[in-house]
Length: 329
Image (tube, rainbow, N blue to C red):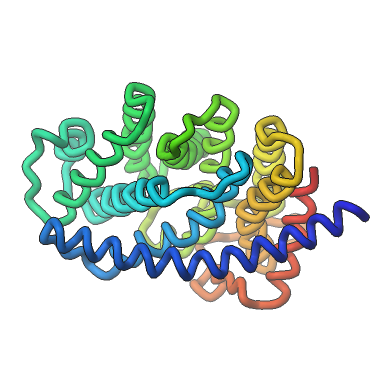
């Protein structure tokens, strides 16, 4: 009964805070990014501009502040600036790969020899400026560069996901490493150097987020011929068990990392809240299973079948249930 009260109070306060903070951070990010474009005489396309802004605006109050509150503080403005530059880099780099804008050698040079790379486009120029800025801010530069190399390698491997013969084991490895190393980078952008346990938590959260993104991108990936664990799904119950096991492993990492106290409750609720979105997507897929055993034909799904509307009351209720179940310490 005590936990139900703590959970209810935590989730209400968290929701109100996120709604308010997201609006403020979005407005700040738009202004900052416009000023940055003006400073470097660059203009991003609208899709990339708002991908950066929207990613930053939700990531900061939901994830960054959850980690910061464990140390009884909020993410400060300098840390937020670094996180925004992280999304500038990650969003533009995704464009380089997804739109085939740069070859493998050019991708390596702009990533690891940016000082010597001559930018040919606005996107390349902004990427280099943000990349160099972040490198200048991190405390453990050698370790940070090592992680960027690991992320670069797995991003190169992800090109293999257009190969129909790629094994599920290889897809799983690419998926989890890509998500893990992507989010692990964020742990280096805070004023306080992260502990090993904290970095483990960032990495495990990245695995969950990447797999969740793949669940929400099923239709797009099917259209583009990209093979993910989600698009390769043959049995929705088997996949659900796999995802739940991954969440359980992650929440054990949370349990080991977070210090006891009321801030540990808010942190666990926040992490369970992020994880619950994947379970909502899986619940949606259950509606389209072919039989009671859970078999499913992913290629037969249309866009409407995989759209998840989180404003619908049933989805909100299911999300709260999953948060309560997995966020309970």
